[in-house]
Image (tube, rainbow, N blue to C red; front, side, top):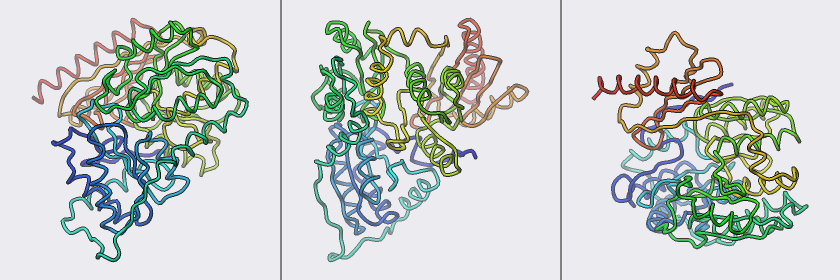
Length: 457
């Protein structure tokens, strides 16, 4: 069983995104609401992150839903995984207004299915076809939907995580939380406090201009968090992206934990308590597989994107396989006993449990992982698909994997070149157990990409 990626026209890997007033407009949000309401009649939950354009888009999308007869439940500002949990527990679908890690001028829409997962490719293509229909049906005046506000439902999400750690593993532990002025201001501090942690926050006031740092939790952007972790003698620091479906960590010395190492540590923690399959995209470092195999678990790879990871997990479980964990090497981790989506709040809580269980400092745990070297680069180009086709021909005699883009495997080293699902660019990734071999393969890939792009320009 292998889930295939299908070509969408408007929606990318994680919803539709773009610059407000250009690619993303209230008119588009209205049409998405109408299309979603036509496909998923019933009670639809709507939420948003803290972006300044959120209320405008949310109101337009809700108008489209109401016009088709759907009843709208406005959950207000909350993390994407919180809305996904609420939909899974109560409603017929959902829509999240967010652009995740993109800069403040961006916004977008993620569509959520009744099971809490993001809408898959096949249904998204159906929705896109609905958008092009100029005569989407609307209900008469006496059959339009109604709207209620339900901001209190966020507490149910917080409790759903906290209840999984009744032993309060955070007792005596100080944690610094950086929600990045996003919706996790309302959730992650509360979750970790419920686990017994002493919490210090930075960028802890919701603000869609993101005054402290950009929504992408990069090492440079987290220097303030790192300094505060060291100054407060905290066990670790945790930061989120713009909609808090991802979490990244700073160790007690103020060092940024590369996300694949984060994934590996939590994989190790989970696999020591349960055996089964880990599901992750082809872009994830091989260190995760090395750790999983060492702990008696296996790994199954998917196309890049949490949609494909989550749906593969569900299909494997439906087929009788034991799936214990999943996620991506960007801090977006999926805990199947909780829900089938990336969840930054659950990731932060699990790190507390991990440190309490091991009794070791985070920096020491990271130092004990197998050594891998990863190189990443983005190159702007509108010719991503054609570039991959030509690279495939050039390297057809090699050990290649075309699950998503082109992955070239050479002994303990691999390179992945793929077109972004959200931006007009291609990504080059190299993962190696030897730094010199990794650098050589990276330079080879970059040269090949440059040569081909010159012929396409």
